[in-house]
Length: 201
Image 1 (tube, rainbow, N blue to C red):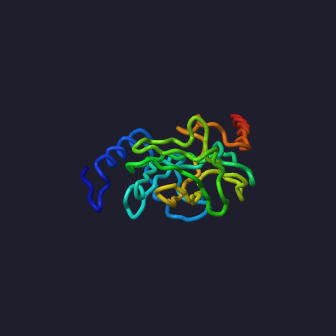
Image 2 (spheres, rainbow, N blue to C red):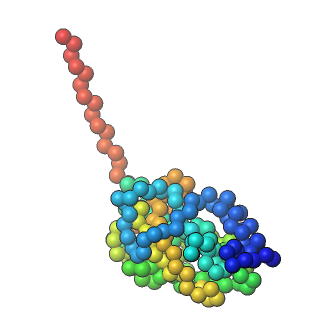
């Protein structure tokens, strides 16, 4: 297997291409740290995040080709002290299995894991199937989509991996995901009465 200092192994690159094609997720390096709103910045709701470290895809043996927090429907919000599911696609490229043991969100605290997440070698694992296995609870502010959350992922072998994860609205290709617990409904548009036609003179 060919490996250089600048490039991942051939097998890893092949997995990256397959995962990227399957997920069709644009690359977001994430430039902010912490729990910061970015709703006043250009934002596309179909942009999930990926793990980039020092301009290299992945960090060590851990590659994350998609990562996002599922927010509310467009125009709605997740309430203060509510919950939000975290969706990660993780590829462990090491020769031995690894385990995601814990997740902490900056400014929020430890996330709830239903159980440690097993990561076989060279097998893409989706933490949201069949149901979300990671949940942010008691979020300190309401979420509308467009914010970002800094996550610290603790692996048994790979150690701690950090990445900034966007909050994605439940719309477009994310519309079929289960709604986040306690999300408020989007407001119903109020019809605007049409102006009366001008009388002819």
